[in-house]
Structure formats: structure tokens, C-alpha cells
Length: 304
Image (tube, rainbow, N blue to C red):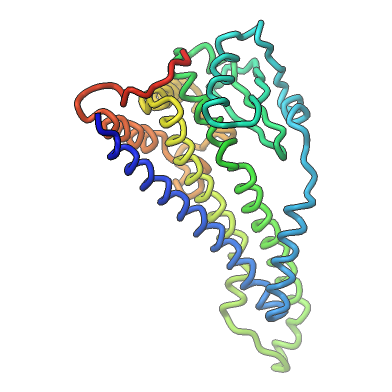
């Protein structure tokens, strides 16, 4: 079978998501830079960008085991979960990771899985509800999704976006404080201020948050694609997401997310894309990969 269409399809998706990621990071940097310019001119832009680099580089990394311990997750050994351990090990090797992430288990009924990457200190956690509810094939799709987050350095990308957001918030507060203490000058006509800086000072933190959430959704779509690539089986993650969505409908609205989405919450305020949209894209990818009615391209690896 000629697989060139599949590679072109994957390349287009990767290029699109990479452009989205770059655009959103530049927009966040631009927003911070504009605030700096309003407050101190060109020097304000330089100071803001230097602050981003310093905060990003020198922010201490909390070890993964401390984060997992705080979440009450316990490490799993190969003897305790041989199948899960073998899945994670094989997927890590196929993704080209230097080492396999540590595997953790949360005794929670929620259907949840997440990864942690603290400067190369990596770990993946799954819940009791997820292990109980999913088939081995579906679990492989979930683990491949988390492995892709680590492979794509998504945690560093989101950390950089978070730094932009924090500094934007600080500059916004500082700017509003300066405006308040300068209010007598404005009222007496000794100083003037245009409407645009005022509006930006107030709404910049909200805009930065929306850019952060949009970036998170973009990285989720890319991790979905990475899961399909690692397994050569887009249907594995699609089936897992469908099962999680069914569980959501039947239970208290738990989601396959670190933070549950509230009912009626606008899509722009969600860190993850709608589950149905993720399933639709994966199913479309499966059809692209199997144009003649097969279930893959013949490159699938068996991890379940």
C-alpha cells in the first residue's frame, strides 16, 4: 500500500499545529511587550522580555515524585502492573524518549491520566477508574497520548506561556496602580492618557489567559495525533475518549482532564478541546490511514 498520503496528512496536521503554537506564543509575548511599551517605552519591552527569560530559566523544578505524592499517587513496579509497565516502556522507546517515565497509580474512581515533566524528571499517572474501565487497546491509546506530551516538550511550552501570563498580570496591576495614583493629574489636566492603554491594562490578563487556553487545546490535538502515530491506530484513543465521554454522561461529569470542565462552560474557557471534536478528528485520521477499509497501514505495533 502506498503510504505517502498518510505522511502528507500527518505533515499538514503537524505544520498546522506548529504554526498555531508559534502564533499563540508570539501573541502572548506581543501582549506583554505592548504593556511594557505603554509603561516605559522601548526599554519596557526589553525589560519585559528579559524578565520572561529569567523567570523561565530560574523557576525551580519540583521533582515529579513530590508532585505525585501531593496528589496521593503511589509508584507502580513492573511486578504490580506488568502489562501497563510493558505498554509504557514500549511506547517510550518508540517515541524516542531517553528513558521510560515513572508509572504512578491513583486510587480514584475518576477516568483520568496525566503526565508530569519537571526538567526531564518525567512520570505518568493513571487512575483506578481508568484502568478498570478501559480495554488494553484503549489504555495504550491514552498512554501514547501522554507520552506524546512528553516527547513534544508540551510542559515547557505551556510553562513559557504561563510565564507570559504571570508577568502580564503583574504589569497590568502595576499599570493600574500607576493610573490610580496619577488620577489627580488626569483630573486637573496636567496629564493625559488615551483610552487604548486603559482598556489594555484592564483586559490584558484575560486575553493572556485565553491565549494560554487556546495553546493548551492546540497541544492536545497534537498529542492526539502523536498517539495515533505511535500506535498506528487512531481508533485506540478515539475509543478510549468515547468510553470516557460515556462515563461522563452517566456520572458526575468527570472528564479525562486534570481539571473538570463545568457544564455550560464556553469552549474558549476550556483547557482541552471538546471530546466529540477530538473523536471526530481521530476517526477521520483512521479513515485516511485505511482508505480500503482496513484498520491501519500495516505498521501498527502491538502493545496490548
